Length: 157
Image (cartoon, rainbow, N blue to C red; front, side, top):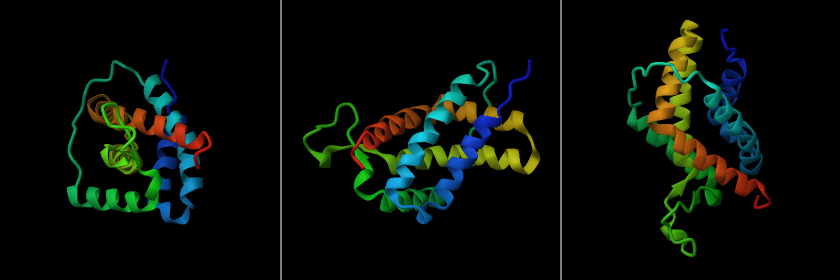
């Protein structure tokens, strides 16, 4: 039986559009919307066939990636940094977690697969790209961002 990835693709598309047009949002509303979207992407990735063979994994243009990171960091402001295990929680200057970093990594992986799917209608290649990147790189960014957003949206923004 062939699986329907419509929900996963819709969540990825919504995520990418929210990054593309982030300046049209207030940061608080944007964070709350992301708090709803990321768990959908996480659920879709958990549901993704595990027998998909690894595929090509390439680094994106580093200058464009850095520009996106800076754009997100400026947009997120005080909500960007957070403590990861091992950080001193009483000293924000020691925090090593960054939503801007999480969102940048997620965006480039998800956007690349979405562009492949949109340009060529090649769902199988997009799924392989997403699954490979998820396993090799961005799964932890997704989990960290989900935890941070859940904490923020639990009354802190």
